[in-house]
Length: 424
Ligand code: GDP
Ligand code: IMO
Ligand code: MG
Image (cartoon, rainbow, N blue to C red; front, side, top):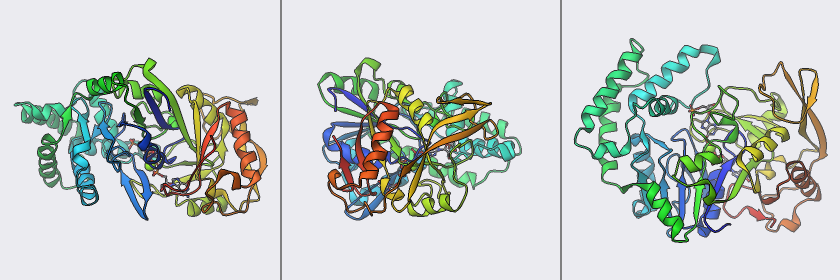
């Protein structure tokens, strides 16, 4: 942990286990702040035998002493957000006291969701596999300078602004059939906005800067993963935000020279949900076995996640793009029982052997080259001391450290808070 602000983010295609680790780390921080994405995210954390899935709310919310901020880089669907709040209120009746929302965050309208569905339908077999939460169209309106922001709901002409944007969307949609009852969705949305207006809305960029200057510790929580970044991911099969470390600066109003540690999370293997290239994919029985053992089904959509071996050129790329200073390896327990583990260390790309991530990861251009390492048989889920982990897992971890040049400081061996082993 550094003096000021640290970032925690995913290094693969999302679902690395960010929610669990943010929850584990929160007791060391005063503020936890989400900086991008929206309800496309599903961050799971477990403690005392209960599992929680958060979509918009930062994963530090279960800790009484931490302030949770939804930053300006986030896009928010008031309906989904209020449902999340309602679920949370049962368990954490005071959660709204420690939750602050940026006025500069953008609102997802019901028509954004319709535009998302229309865009995917138009792409046919080339669809992105979007979560259909309206993420892409909302960020398009943001950069197109048409968006509606949370702070607008405090202005007297909010309804005029809403109607103007809705009209624009409906014109774009033409005869496209709404995938849900629009009148009902709109009424729900308005009700949710009314509730939102009564919550703690703030200029969170200023709040973050003041927090930093007062010597408090900030943890910036990423959503999605580096390979879904709009610039550095497997474009166009990406999300519409900057999921990499730079996104924490623009999504919170945090200057780059205030960032300390960049904590990168990865699974001991790879998963991807939605379309797009995945060089090390195991589209076979072994892939299915990993999916079953790792419960690899989307936290937001329930879709089966594609599974595959660890991809080191991709991981090294993610380490560089983000300036990762600490690695955390998740779901090591899922690989127990495999005699041998393949790890991709290079690619055959257009007749050449390369160790970097090339421009295109399309299947017909790229073939992964694997190194085989020994697996382990032991069930890891009850291990409480890193010294008791199998030697072949230690060798697997050291291999990753050598290949990336970054220490693996933590190994996760189960979904619960407690199933977390520190190596450093
Ligand atoms: P996030 O989006 O990065 O927060 O990750 P998700 O919550 O979407 O997916 C991670 C899934 O793996 C969740 O169901 C977690 O409860 C679970 N999980 C996290 N860490 C571990 C681990 O070390 N072992 C196992 N078996 N499950 C884990
Ligand atoms: P967390 O934060 C995994 C994927 C979708 C799709 C693509 C674009 O839980 O790790 P979008 O709805 O953003 O337009 O979808 O990105 N995707 C995720 N995959 N984890 C996520 O979030 C994701 N958020 C979006 O499946 O392929
Ligand atoms: Mg997730």
